[in-house]
Length: 379
Image (cartoon, rainbow, N blue to C red; front, side, top):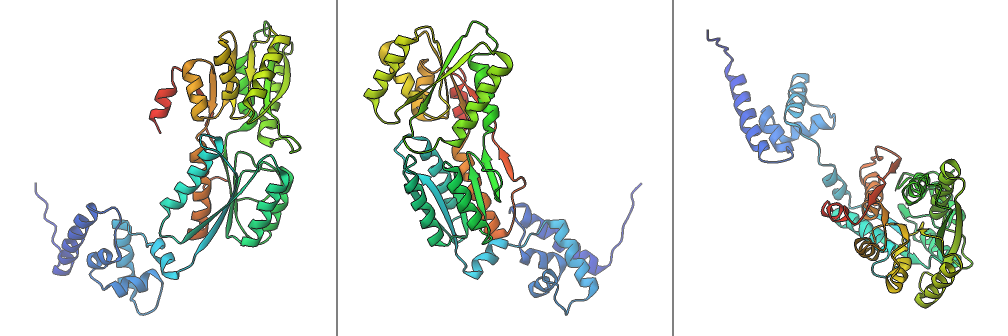
């Protein structure tokens, strides 16, 4: 049986216009105000009055316009509205100076990629660099930030107390802040992106030592920061590692030793001396991104009887992982974290849109020589 449904001429015209408009929309990702007007059989001006709740539109027309909007998925072009205001937004990023291949290059890459992808939204990026081993250098970057009067701040809090003071000052002026790496407690911030640090240290101990009662000692090679206070994220990983030993392998001792971030010959002598005095130590961990400093010594000395675990996907670490001098890397998408942190600031400034979650924890990725190429292929 065939059912016939009759409609009047006006309804037929509306349906035809809607079908034609839908065909156009099918080939485009976003419906336009003009397409809404065509489908509803009204002028663009009428659609604009409906969207902005202005007078001069009948209730019947208003309902018809909203019906079309819901059906074809029209969304106002907020970005175009922002551009029409000609307002510039200033974001300051505070990061350490870096050399090619270092951890902070990944952070820089994520920051600049986020701003580049927002090209046309009037985002002005200022990066204030500092010497990460010099507190006064960091304080200088903080002063520069205050003088710049930014609309938003991106920061990785290496110097915790000074970061807290800076953030309190900025947030008292309603300036949003996004963190990566670590987040100081008792501060107001828009978003945090980073690895769960304590848990990553706990996992590191499980991967390196586990519950093996035969492992009596692990050495942790930390970066010598001179007069600068310890890096908070490294300390948190260290606490997680020690907590695992206390819980699961209390007979295993964790010995701390400091290495230079830059002096290759000093480190060669340091590693030679340490392992000459501790020949039975076979397990090594670095809670920083510089496991490759230890792996270089192992490769030069032909050491193959030690297990080294490190953090972060630096190219030097990846090479050492592939050649077997680093056994395990615990990795995170550092550039992606920086990208997302800056993107959260841009979305807040431009759209007044807060991130879905305030604290955004990365996955803790375990890399070995056998899976690293597949992991990199996902990039």
